[in-house]
Every structure is written in structure tokens, then in C-alpha cells.
Image (cartoon, rainbow, N blue to C red; front, side):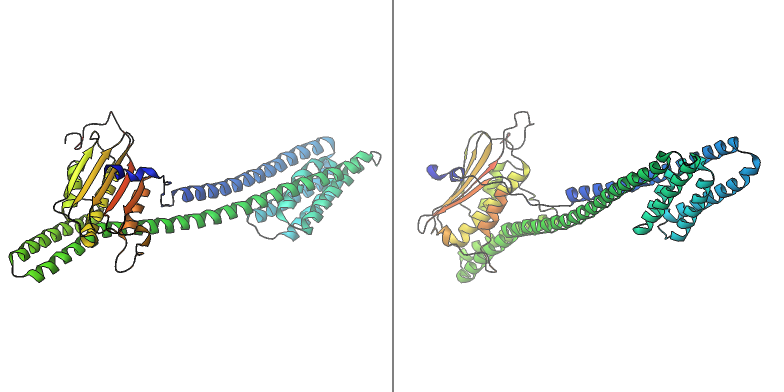
Length: 427
């Protein structure tokens, strides 16, 4: 026994944690949605800046023109400026609502062309008009409207130079080409960003659904282990006792077996109620760990013994719960399958871990040839292994036909020197 007591230390098993919840996926998805909303807000800010720039440039150009021309020349220009301003407002409203406004845009460009050729002072407003055309239209229509704006501006400035300054003619055209290329690049990047956001949102949604499914599966596995280690094992042992009592009835042995079965059923009823209330173990958690383990084992094996090595100390609640369930499942297996005369538990406190070995001198079996889980049973060893490994521990089974069985587990439980005294310390 001592040479095999810590068999679980021989190998190392990676941590196995079940994915659960939607927190990470939900957080990433919310971040993607926020990024998309921020992008929309930035584009809205740019549009507002363009419209404000148009208003400022229009007023400045209008003041400049009025100061340099006679009142007789102002009437037509003021009428064209007012018409252009009204058309600009209509097109901007339609563009903000996503409605098609090609006739309005080309009407605005036509009025603007007459205005800028008649009064080149308004040429500066062409920048805002260019961006409005590109945002209100798409495809060839957008290029046509922007090109007409650049051409009209070039003609107006070239007329202002009395047809002598070639730069006035080529400058607006070159600026129009550059602005077109820049706008196309910005638009392409924005569309690519929206596409990536959509892909990330879809992926995050799929991840969230996957996490929910994984969490559901993990919870089902956990509940399955709890039911197996409590209700199923207790009912199976009670059934064996009742069958034995039936065969010996009405002898004294039958009375004792009936009383034991009744007591076990009462404990099983308590365990079932505890499963309904957050799967706790009332009556076991309040006592020191060695006492709780021995009590759990003697529910199934009345003559079970317990050996403790190392200095007693508190262990984390999840480790304590796992050890209790492991003892219940192993002790039930001893009753159901081993036919053992004795059962010994060895609880060892190591510096950074706690180990538990459950040894019996029963019939033994070949672990490699153990039957897979089915409706008839077979969940015990798998449930014990999953329970231990999900806490980062190591689980092993040593057995051979006719040589008894050792179920061994090692769970991480580092020392906490400053932790207040608990039940184990006062044991």
C-alpha cells in the first residue's frame, strides 16, 4: 500500500476546463458594435464639417464679390448663389437620408457651373460641392458630377485670368483628380472596415453560441457526475441490501440489512435534496475533511478505515467537494463490484497538493478492459477522472484480477499560512 499510495503523482495531466458563459464573446461583440457606431459617427462629423465649410466659404465669397462689383452686377449672382444654396441644402438632406437625388445633384452642378463661371470668386466653394456630389451619388454618376464641378471651376478661374494663366485651367482639374483618388481610397477603406466588422460580428456571434453550447454540455456532465456519485450509487447499494434482506427474511440478518438499507436511503434522500439546492453536501461540509471522508465511505463500507499523513490544513471548497464525491463513488464500487473484506482510505497533505488513495482487497479487474458507460452503469471511473482533472489534478486506477484496487487522486491545494483556522485545523 505505501508504495502505491501516491500513484497519482507518477503522471501529469493537463488542466481541462469547460468553456461556459458568453462573457468574452459578448464583450468582443459589443466592442465590434461600438466600433461600427463610432465609425458612423466619424463620417457624420466629416459631413457636418463639409457643410459648415460650404456655408463659410459661400458667405466669404459672397462678401468678396459684393465688395468688388456694382449693385447692378450683384442681382444675377445673388440669385444664382441663393439657388445654389437651396439646392445644396436639398441634396444634403437627401444624402443624409440615403435617398436617390441624382436630378437634384445635376441641377445643383448646372446652377453652380453658371455661378462659378459668372463669378469665379465662388470657386473656393467647389471643394464642398465636390464632396457632396461624391457622397450623394455613386458609380459613374458621382464621377460625372464631380468632374463637371471641377471643369466648371477650371473654366471660371481661367476666365478670371483672362485666358492667360494655364495653371488656373489645369489646377482645378488636377486637384479634382487627386481628390477623386483620395476619396476613392477613403471609401474603399471604409467599405473594407465595414466588411471586416460584419465578419467579426458574425464570428463573435458564432463563438458566443459555441460557448453557450459548451457551457450547457459541461453543466450536463457535472450534474451527471453528481447524480451518479450520490443518487445512483446510493440506490444501487440500497437495492443490494434489500435483496439480501429479502433472501434472509425473516432472520435477524435481514433486520440488520433492512435497517442499513433504510439508513442509506435516508442519506440518499438528503443528498437528492442537496442536489436541488445547488448540489451541496449538507452534513459533510461542516466537519473536518478526514471525518467527512470517513463518514462518506462508511455509508457504503461500514468497516472502512482512514489513515492521514502530513499536517492537516484547510483545502479549497471545490477540492473538498471532489474528494467527497470520489470517496462516495469508490466506496459504492467496492460494495457493488469488489466483494472486498477491507477498505482503507489514505489522505496525504503535501506542500502544494492533497492526495487520496482508496484501497480495497477485493476481486480487482483489468482497467484497460473496463466496460464503457451504458444504461447498465460504467460511469463511475469516468466521472471520477473528469472531476479530478477539471480541477487540474491527476487521477489513476491500479488494479488486476484478484489483486484488489487502488483509486488514487492528487489535487492542487497550496498551503495558505495566513488563512484563519478552519475545521481541519481544529481536528
